[in-house]
Image (tube, rainbow, N blue to C red; front, side, top):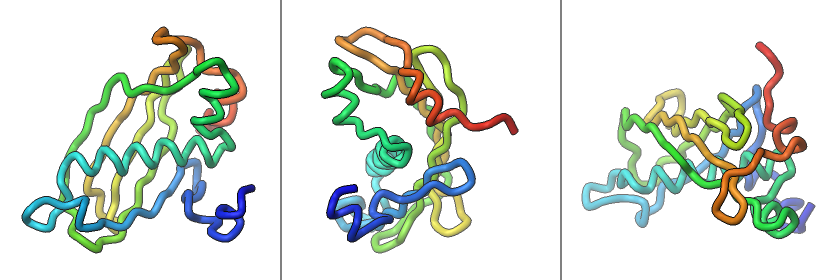
Length: 150
């Protein structure tokens, strides 16, 4: 555990009920002229959620790339519903949960919430690649992200 993680243990969010939960505050830079969150800012929030999910299961993307010959995850497909608007200074929660695991890809279900209100819902398919080609998701990572049968 790094010094920052020791001092700020929830900086990267936490796992709760099979999902990763990440708090995000809305800053001026995230908004448009109306002080509402600009639609592309939600993509950044969702990316942070996916990155911190990996970190929560003790996999840093930089380590994957460095230690596994350039292994990386890339977004292949995203389906997103904008259901409500966040405002400057809102504290949001990005909820990320594994939905489906395939050979070289996985689907993650994500939500951006303000309290109990879902503002954005997305299904994101990420592909595991090395050298620009799809490769099987490593077994250790697959095991860490696979939820037990419900």
